[in-house]
Image 1 (cartoon, helix red, strand yellow):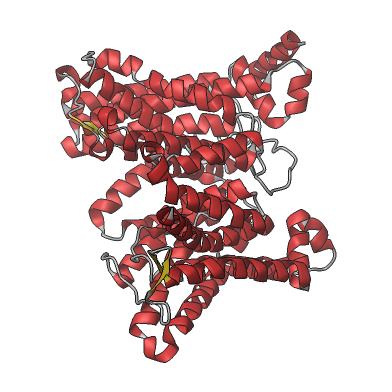
Image 2: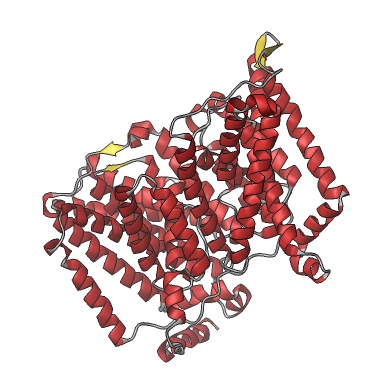
Length: 628
């Protein structure tokens, strides 16, 4: 019993830092409506700056002064980021704001390595809390007990700040109705800056307080941001008390999961988040909001099919690309095949986002399932490569069918977070089911057969499948099904009134996107000759989002351009510089600021507008009449 009590106290201590970071993210989202992916980066910066101030400048500030000073320094940096970057894109689509904060995260990851080096750093022990306290015969670090008390104290301070001060009243009012607050003469710019600074301060303080417990390293940001998203969603967006309760719940699940459910310990928190989202989409303590009508910030202009000249131009481009083996070596062909594969992956997510209005944060799940599908069929069942390519992606389709059934019941950020939860569940299964997936060692030796083994042959295969996949998805966009899906995206009530079953249509689109994502994963497994749990990871899902947003989510073909630019640039930068993330992150930010509609979307603004194809309008009218 004593051991379990100590384990419970350890969970409470971990909950303190997690609550600080989650409350900061919840405050920022509640007012600015920015899903701040860089919040984990500020947490990491807080830890690094605190390490420097408490270890190398301890004589000047002392340990606790260094902790507070580190949080204030990072908060000031956060305020500058808000004024210099985020103010410029508040009116851009919200997904582009997510993209900008992702670019900032990439930059910070390289900056900390540049300033502090790649090695883990071990911070000083907290003065006055270096020993342990005996609890029922078990030793509990006294610093853990300090954190257990500190968490509720911060909760009380935040409650007072938001309930008993004028600033807090304005923040709560802005959370409910920003336009009304602006009409009352409140300077929204400085209100947003102060809110962002407070949120960053809490994140940095959470990171700084961790240095006596954990080593400081440059992967802290991605590790914490996933858990923080889970906490915020479970507790309810904008609810500080909900973030506290959810932080305790998640930390205790992490503490006891390895003891009670060792086989599914990594999955537990995501299972809980999935259940909460399905039963109560707005979180345990959040407030129900009106359902989102479309992807946040998405306003797609009427699309038109390609003209005959444009079709010929596309064919000519594919023919020119097919001639690459005559000009490039094996490395160029390998890079070309990888880019073609990611064109399929990005196009599948783009179909779901642009046509369906559904922004998935876990699309890598179906990419990875397709990869594992061909690996298991080829290695264990001994099926030929053609059969594996046909059947392997069906595992992605099956996963999309299962998860999509629940996901399409939600909308907006709740839909996105549920897809993230499902993706992390699949990743956890792949990581822990060692007997089947090989766990972290992966499945090796997934090589293509002799007819497709040469770099040129595999490149041609990947290019051909990519071209066919893009054509198939484009046909789906301008089919009666595509029009029904777009009607559901734009006006659920009107589409329901003419007899369109919106949820069934969206579920079908989810399955289609998952199938094509699985196809990309299947080809990727043959390209690399192996499959690992990383093929299901959140970083790959974010890559897909970046490709779509860079190309232009409000376009039909933006994903193709976005995938080519992002993947080619990232591969080239890795070969040219040790600071590829810094350069790539800066490039992403420049694109977001200078081209808020994406590369293709911006180019389209310089082209003369044409009305939608009349035949397409006839198809839409016919579908509506049939539905009636």
